[in-house]
Amino acid sequence: MSNPVAQLVTPREVATVRAFLGREAAVFVNGVNLLVDAGFTAAMTTNQVDFAGLA
Image (cartoon, rainbow, N blue to C red; front, side):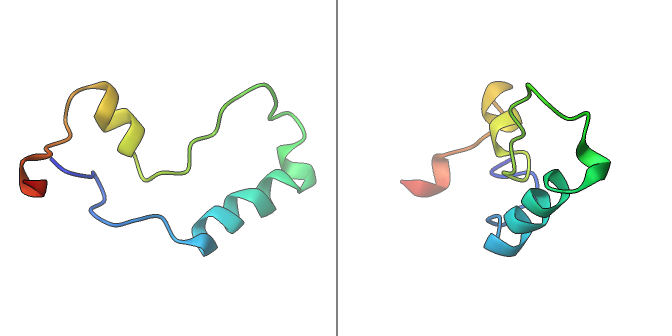
């Protein structure tokens, strides 16, 4: 599995998360690292990333 979603995160997708964090609905979201990477970090952590295609 290379990337769970198989695409890069776009600036718009990151902006959407940032916009949410600026709203009152996110008032209780604090002290957390919110990764906006389409699951890439989770795949790296569980050794599900295949770099064989890069060679």
